Length: 233
Image 1 (cartoon, rainbow, N blue to C red):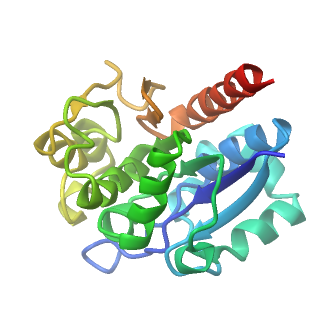
Image 2: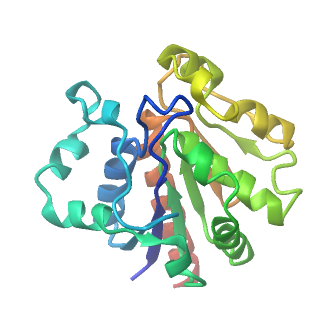
C-alpha cells in the first residue's frame, strides 16, 4: 500500500488578529477522498500537530463540495484531521507522495519551515510526487532554503493576487505568494477566470491554483503514482 502524507497549516490568525484563517476545508476533503479511493495509506500532519484551525469561510454551505458534506458525517476522517501528527513527529519517515492543502495560514507556517523543507527535499531525492494547492504552494519556499535553485524556471501556479484582492484579505497577509514565487525564479501561470480550476505539472511537482483545483491536483498525483506502479510491475 502506497504511503501518502497530507500536510495542513496550523496557523489561525490573519495579520490583524481579528480575522480567522486556517485550512481551506475542501482542499483537505476533496483530496482525502480521492486518496482513500485510490487505496493510499494516509498520514495527516501539521507544523504543530493536533487539531488544525479551519478557515470559517470554508465551512459555509456555499463553499461546501460534495466531499465536505461527506466529511461532516465521517467520524474517521474527522478524527484523522483533528489529531494530526506534528511535522517533527513525522521525522524522516519515507512517503511515496506528499500533498499540501490550501489555507492562508500556510503563508505563516509553511513558507519557512525547516522540517517541511527536509521532507520535501527527501521527496525530491526519491523522485516522489508532491502536490500543493493554493497557498500550500508556499511550501516551495521552505524547500528553496535547502535547494536554492529548485524554483528556477519551474512551471507553477498558486493563489493569485487577483483572487486575494477579490477576497479582500491581501492587506492582512505577510507577503504576496505570486510575487515571492516569481522572485524565486518560477514561471507562474493561472486560469484566466479567477477561482476556476488550473493545475500545472513540472517534474515531480503538481500545483493547483485554488480550492477549485484540489480534486484535479489530487487526481493528477494519483495518476502519476499509478503510472509509476505500472512501470515497476
